[in-house]
Length: 149
Image (cartoon, rainbow, N blue to C red; front, side, top):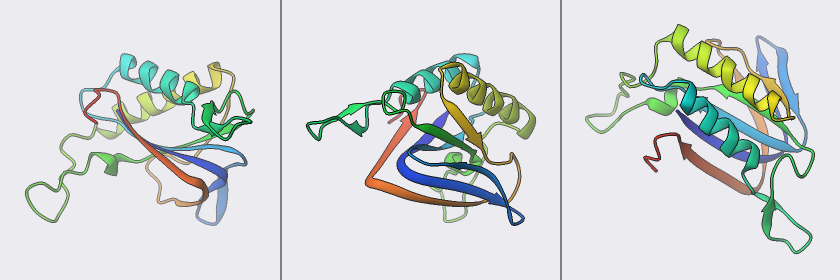
């Protein structure tokens, strides 16, 4: 499982002109599910993201989590995080999970984030989405449940 995590002051997702998810202070999480991912990958990613200390404390150091600052999460599925362009210029998505498996793990991730006590808004799985955000810092973190990077 892979994620691009961005610290935001606000973010929203729109589908066909309708807002499907919107947050203020918090984290925008673009989440990709891999072919071999399972519940342990979901648990790792949800725990890591909920506790990720990328918000500033009173001394200006990144020492607080989204839970600590009372923020929210906007989770957006993004299979293109598994796009492989090592052999050309057109991405191969062979390592991405099939849609139904990916949907189940994405929804489980959202459940785990909510169970951690966070408000979690979402995009729409397998829909063309427009994502708007204000990245604070900017702060962007890449995560991989297999610790590939």
